[in-house]
Image (cartoon, rainbow, N blue to C red; front, top):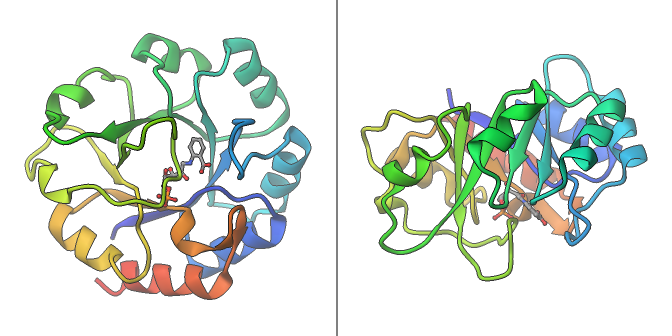
Length: 204
Ligand SMILES: O=C(O)c1ccccc1NCC(=O)[C@H](O)[C@H](O)COP(=O)(O)O
């Protein structure tokens, strides 16, 4: 069964809707430049409201080590997700499993790129858009993804209920990650879109 992460959650009610629909994980963006950024107080309220067995993931973009530690001191996050140029050695400093986001460009050798983060529990493939570290809402060429791989694929980038089944059938990811495809407006989720997305993933 393909796991589901709903990313860019900013409100308790959206986190509860994601959990209620059957999502395995939610993502909280700790990057001030994002329209989906959360404060530590918002993040704490969201994490505390969740029922058990929903994984909480904190997203960072080239944040300082002290910044990440300050978040971890106050918000009980299960995993970290790095969207900048963080090397494996940095990502491994936080006593948490981590996911490395890799933004895919035409011609990339994805096996070679994934090998740069041997400590990652998953490699999240996302679309490349200059100046945008994540949450682009755009797809990339899924046929670039090798069918045989030694790393764990988390597929992201422009997924929505209308294309997620095709994406899964083509790439067989461990998990799919969605943000814009289940939103009403940036940072505000749409419960019907969340339910439709989860339904499409689980019907396989
Ligand atoms: O969502 C953001 O604004 C964001 C900002 C900085 C780093 C990462 C960010 N989002 C990551 C995600 O929401 C997902 O992991 C992924 O990019 C999929 O987004 P989408 O294409 O909107 O489904």
